[in-house]
Length: 418
Image (cartoon, rainbow, N blue to C red; front, side):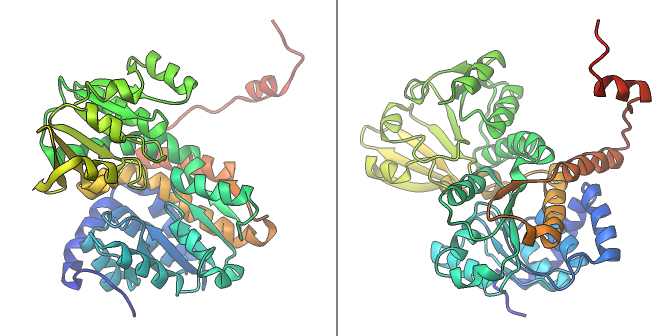
């Protein structure tokens, strides 16, 4: 079996960490039990480009239990957990191409290694795999039945491709599932981003000014958690509706040009480019801390920061200190990459349980229905979303009410009024 990881000797440590994550992933365990019995993915080649974490390992082993033939690569150069990669190779027999801290050339070599698996199904987080399949590897796209996409950034790219008529196969937007973005994006990103910032800096959030760029579901979760730790939260937005919501949630809202001068911590979660740029760096306090929790490291204009700086040094793990000509220092975390995975462990297993349940069931759906679908981006079917929510409640030991016959009739009728 071909693979490229840091060290196979890390496998046993990784196995224990995977087992720890599995304890909080009851939905995926139930799906794996059914998959093992029914084998809905028997013989299906899957190329997965995801963050190589303990939760991803649980998904990979679930897909394999369903009969899938998998190759896995990283969706971000800093998000791989090397012991997990080793465990998947040694204990699960899954070829993995991922090393934490890999350079750009290695990152794309690993993407190509996953594509060399000649997939019938793609599983992406950021759409880099699909982009490659529409570029140098386009000759293989005809063999792809369909794919899934995990994150907001990837869905934006895929919808652009579909709009331009260049998307070569259907893709299920896992990110749009209610059981994904309401929980993963909000609670997962919120907690894990704060975790990453604190592990990297060991700075006190209480009493600080914490600037959140973007008030989508990730921004909502991040603002909530920063506020919970005592920070004075400022939100920057371009959408008036989201800006009003942030105000009514109790946060100050202002342009980044104004926030730059007062912020102690900055974190971008927008999915766009150059959200923090030259004019903002020029206004920041000495010691300002900048991080990103969007998928790509383009939200912070790092080249502009490099040009403004007279010196750069790594002052702590995952902290680069940029000294400007006037003596101010600006600290960039995790090379501007996903800080929750660069310096921490990513989302907690309990929220990824639902996200990856969507991945597993969407892969099954694509295999069964892919040939009937147009070359477009589709939401996760509502019945899958609802089933995952039901299974999650079961796994948590929670029961809810059911409609009575009279209530069902009332909701379905128009005759009954005041």
